[in-house]
Amino acid sequence: DLPGSCVFPTHQELHKDTSHLYNFNWDHCGKMEPACKCHFIQDTCLYECSPNLGPWICWRKERILNVPLCKEDCERWWEDCRTSYTCKSNWHKGWNWTSGINECPARALCRTFESYFPTPAALCEGLWSHSFKVSNYSGGSGRCIQMWFDSAQGNANEEVAKFYAATMNAGAPSHGIIGS
Image (cartoon, rainbow, N blue to C red; front, side, top):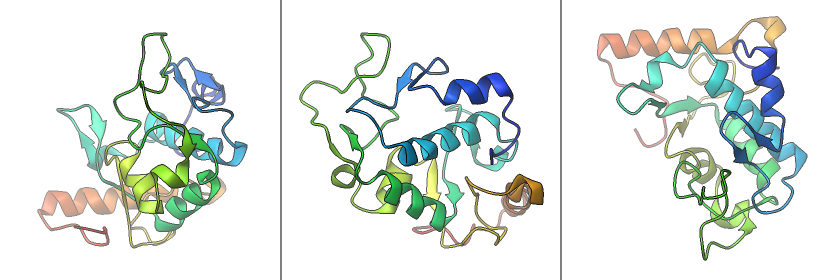
């Protein structure tokens, strides 16, 4: 299910190969595997629509930073994308936008995701310049953001956001994040 409260036009736009939200072409190195593309749709919907990313918004840079992503979500994303192709290890910057949509920069080679992202953490942390940080925690722990959850059971990320907001407000160090 979709995280947060994606409204229909936003959600519908995310499913296009080149979304008008950002003019971003997922198929910049040939057709992306459908299972892989699903993760990017979820990622974008989480970013666009989740009301629970407040603790990780870097206001000066107008972006999210170091969101603790549940380890199995990252591992599944990597597994589903490892055989799709890309030309960059950081999608946050460095594209050729002269045509109006993202294209690989000059001399960038299309290779498998696994070539550019040898580990799940390399994908989840490097793809968007550290928007995500792979957590040691699993979904349901209340300590990591889930891209995938059953909304009939409620929004699994509300408890996580409340926990980290309270932790940050108390000035306590965050726990459960690899490398912190």
